[in-house]
Structure formats: structure tokens, C-alpha cells
Length: 199
Image 1 (cartoon, rainbow, N blue to C red):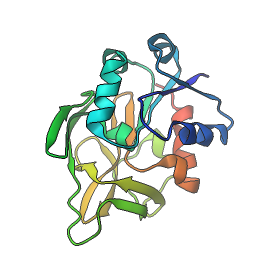
Image 2: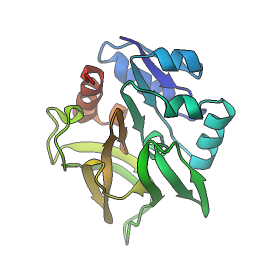
Image 3: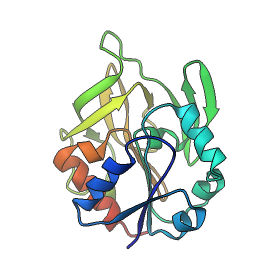
């Protein structure tokens, strides 16, 4: 089974790759359209600025490629946010990949520090194969200032000042707001489940 981590021009590509290697899965980091299209599984990672990431993906000619994928796809952190229709960041609104309906906005943290950084619990909202052996109360590692609200596409939620989507799904596309590669047992289980998916 082939796994491609999309080179979005952002950071943390290698750490995501190492997380899959710990599961015995060899990942290829690529921005080649054909290689991405032919992969059995595709990961869209990301750390940093949404406008920069979208521009990088556009400049690489990957927007239509990612929008046309039929195999299981998972976005991680910023990569999850890129899956949505619009992203608001720094007073700017940019178009996302449009693979999941909705928008990403600033996380309203109330009196809590921003960004939301560190371990937090997740609450399972819907049963899903990617959540096999994952339970409400399990911990995951977050680093983000923006989030998607809870919607019909939410599989798991978390709370930091307000409740937001921690894991989402639309068809063959999943997203994790937290970093599964840094989330110990919970993250490893989710990545394993992703590799075990059958559509």
C-alpha cells in the first residue's frame, strides 16, 4: 500500500512521515500530481499560515489534483483547515480546497491563552472507522489559533474556550485538528485506522 504525504511547502512533513514509519508504513513526500493521484492513501499536512499554504498548493498546480482524489485522504492541523471552503486568518479570507463544507475562523479562547497549545481531551461525536479503539476522554496534542465549528461533518470535538471540531469527515476525506504524530497512543491509533480504511 502506497502512502503519499503532500509537500504543501509547509513544515512538519518529516515528523508525519516518522509517525507512519513507527507503524511500519513507508511514506513518500511528494508534490508530483501523478504520484499523489496513484497513491492508496494521501496525507495533507501543514503548520503555519493558511494563505501561504493555499498559495503554495496553487503554485504547484495541486489544487485540482487534491480536489479530485477518490482514495482516503486525511488533513492534519493546518492541513485539516485547508480542506474547508474558506479560511479566515489575519483579517484575510482565502478559499480552501472545498472538500468539506464550512469555514475556519479564529478560535475564540475567551480568557485562555492563544494559541491553544498542548494536550487536551477529545469527545467522540459519531462512530467512524478512523475512531476505532479511540474513546471520549482520550488525549491529543493541539497547536492552533484557528478552528472549524462543530457541524454535521464533526466526528470528534474538543473544547478550549469554545467547542470546536477535532476530527471531521466528508466522504473519503478526513481531517484532524490536532497532531496525531505527536499524540502518543491516540494519534498512532488514528493513523493506523486511516491506513486500515476500506472504502
